[in-house]
Structures are given as C-alpha cells and as structure tokens.
Amino acid sequence: MTTIQSTIGLLVLDPARPADLDDVLEILAEAAAWLAAQGIDQWASPPPPGLRARIAAEIERGEVYIARPLQDGCAVGTLRFEWRDTELWPDAAGDSAGYVHSMAIRPTLRGRQLGEALIEWAKMHVRNRQRHYLRLDCVATNIALRRYYERLRFRYCGEATRGDFTGALYEFDVTESRTPGTENL
Image (cartoon, rainbow, N blue to C red; front, side, top):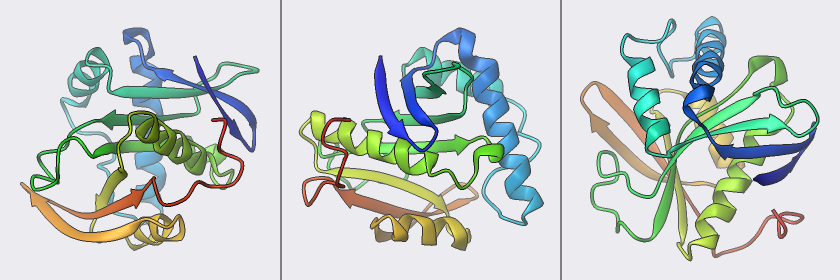
C-alpha cells in the first residue's frame, strides 16, 4: 500500500485490480464528460467502444493505478503508468524514464490539487527506480492542460503523432530538485 499526502487527507494509491475496472472507467467517463462540457479536446465523451477491454488489459499488466482516500476508500482518481512509451517517445532511451497516461480525477474534486499529488507520486516512483525523467503528454491543442504541466515545471519537448492523435510531449527531470514536503512520499 502506497500512501500520498493530499489536500483531502492521505490517499492510498495502488495498482488497480480487475474488481476496480468499473471505478476506473467511471472516473475516466466523468472526466471526459467534464472536459467536453468545457469545450476541451482531450478524450472522447462518451468513451469509445473497446475502452473497457483496453483498460481491463492494462489493469492485468499492472499499469493502472487507482487513488482512494484512506478514510473512506471511495475511488477519486486514476492514472496509467508505464516504463516505456515507444509510440510517442520512440527515440527516447527506454531505461531513463517513467510515463504517465490517462490521469483523471473526479470532476467534483477539481481544484483540490489531487492531480499534483498523483504527479508527485509518479516522480517518486521514477526516482525509486533510479530513472531520470517523468514523461507525459496531452492533446496538442489542449492549451489548458499544457499550461497546467508547464506550471508544474514540466519541460515541453515537442509534438508526436500516432494515427489521428497529435500529442504535446512533456518531461520533468526528477534528479534536478525535489518538491518540498515530498521526501517521504
């Protein structure tokens, strides 16, 4: 069990189990609907056919994580974490980074810095494996999310296209500095 500090108290962040599939899908669907209602192009709403099978396979591979407050256990966020991303980062050294995808927080908790808490966990996860970078991406036209990543001191690394998706690529060098208060995460 991994716990991380957040503005709503301690969160437990663990690999999702098959029984968590509905919670993960619900969080992703809520986030996609909220983004669409704001006119933000990031994820399809409603979710595309086949998403359930894809997420189930990612859970089986141990790539999906789910966050729950320690006090009540209700799922509040999710992310997918991988040690390689050859689709969007094909030229990147495979052993120097960790990659976050599909990070989502329930919209009812928007503004509570839960995304930052999940990102801090991912930075620690990368550091613990003696890797140097945390990398992530977003739809290249999603200016709000790009500004968010830049506010969190991620460095813009260009764009990459896979099929009909063009993503803005970002990385954070976890060896440069640690965020105060995260030493024990």
